Image 1 (cartoon, rainbow, N blue to C red):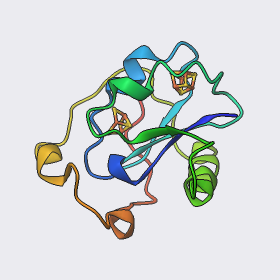
Image 2: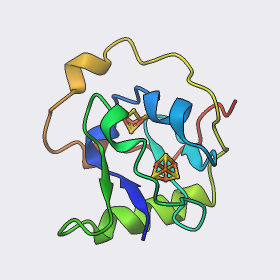
Image 3: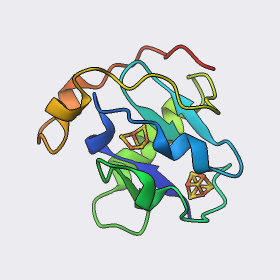
Amino acid sequence: MTYVVSENCIKCKYQDCVEVCPVDCFYEGENMLVIHPDECIDCGVCEPECPAEAIVPDTEPEIESWLEINAKFAAEWPNITRKGETPADADDWKDKPGKKEQLSSNPGAGD
Ligand code: SF4
Ligand code: F3S
């Protein structure tokens, strides 16, 4: 089992999750983070830290496509271990539905 970053993270990217992860298994894209499913130790500490409620366990229904996205991009994007700057318009994107088409496959800055 692993935890998964889902659609709510896109364009919010608050990064509070990064600060609490004991094994540094977050990876940074241009406008969202993902969790490496093989590195996550399933501690659950990050889940309540996300202001956008983007982090869910992989036991959630219909999370399969997001698990695939996390696995794919965790292999491509740089590791992030410290919280960077939150996007200026993050609050405008919070709770917005249908953000999947906004997902950028570009890597983020790393740390
Ligand atoms: Fe890190 Fe724990 Fe969250 Fe997994 S569940 S990403 S190990 S804080
Ligand atoms: Fe994304 Fe939430 Fe972390 S918005 S960057 S999963 S704190």
